[in-house]
Amino acid sequence: MQQHSISVETTPDVIIQKVAGDLRVAGWERGEIMAKTDGDQLSLTPAEAEVQVSCDEALILYLPRDANLKVELVTGDASLQALRGTVTMGKVAGDLSLNDIEGVTVEDVSGDVVARNMGRLEVRKVSGDFTLRGGRGDCLVKSVGGDASVRDVDGVAEFEAIGSDLYLRNVRAGVKANAGADATLYLDPAPDVEYHITAGDDLMAWLPAEADFELHLVGGSPESVHVDFPGVELDGESATYDLTLGEEEGKRARVFLTAGDDLMITSRADQWFSAADFGVGMRDFGEFNFPDIPPIPPMPPIPPDLSERINRRVQEAMERSRSRVEAAQQRAEVRIEAAMRRAEAKARAAEVRARRGQANLNVGRWKWDLTPQGPLSRAAPVSEEERLQILKMLQEKKITVEEAEKLLAALEGK
Image 1: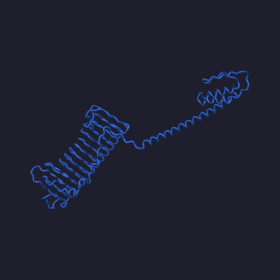
Image 2 (image 1 turned 90 degrees about the horizontal axis):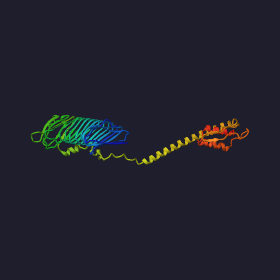
Image 3 (image 1 turned 90 degrees about the vertical axis):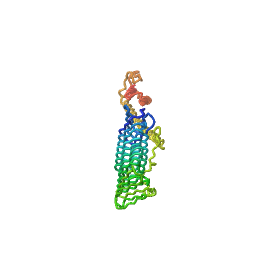
Image 4 (image 1 turned 180 degrees about the horizontal axis):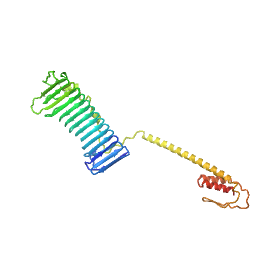
């Protein structure tokens, strides 16, 4: 576990080359960058107005809200919130969650994208689904592999290619979208604004009856086009219709709707909600509640069995240590007993050679007076008490094996 922080200006440029795991970034009102990782390596490297962040695991990062952030690669999920500076995301291998970001550009997301309360949003590729709830700026997406769901956007919404269904409601500054399957629309066209929506299969749109707009419709066949507006009747002989609704002359909204199969336009709310409830097939954004930003990233919860696991590991370590000590003691006793047997055997073998007198013998700090006291005669054997005393000093490592042999040999010849 690593945690570092540094003081910075209010608008630093922060660069992250790679996050090996999940990334969480949040803006705060401090002139400080704080980073935390579960890994072993973490560094914050300032260079003029730029700060480079690197780590070897998942990363939690807190920045000044006006910081500019660039992330080149995230191997897991990414979650960003509360940033007013520019944000550039490269490759995200998992899902991407965005909340309250002023401006962000995303290169490639392998999972889903979920965004809320956004400024300008540009995305090149989303392999999964795309969901946006609330936008202050334009939403520009080149490719969505799954469904696209957009609601309450003040700017323009453009989708070059949507692999499956499109759900769109309350986009006020114009729409340009191409859905591979169905499209469900709730439009309140603004004057002098164009809306272009194409669906590979069915298209259903709700439009207000009192609005003034031009309506250009293309269905899959003459029988597939249906318009349920007061005073509008179709002859049923064509798959293409151009209609002008409303009475006021001037800058009308222009709506272009194309369906590969059925095309239905209605102004009645009861038909709209009974035929295609706008929540069906859409992600309720309540499933994506962003957590409040804590002043300091919370520590991971302590497992309830942590104390038990620690005690068990300590006991196991003590048992292993005790076994190693006992084995070492046994090996030492065997070596000492063998050395004692060798010393005693050598001493007995030297008994014959030690019948004559010898000079004083110094062994370590013990001095033995071995000067003959009278004529040579057969020496008495070494007493058991003397032998045990020498062997005890050997066992206590007060003398060496060689010194013990010399003492036993000398005593045998006293």
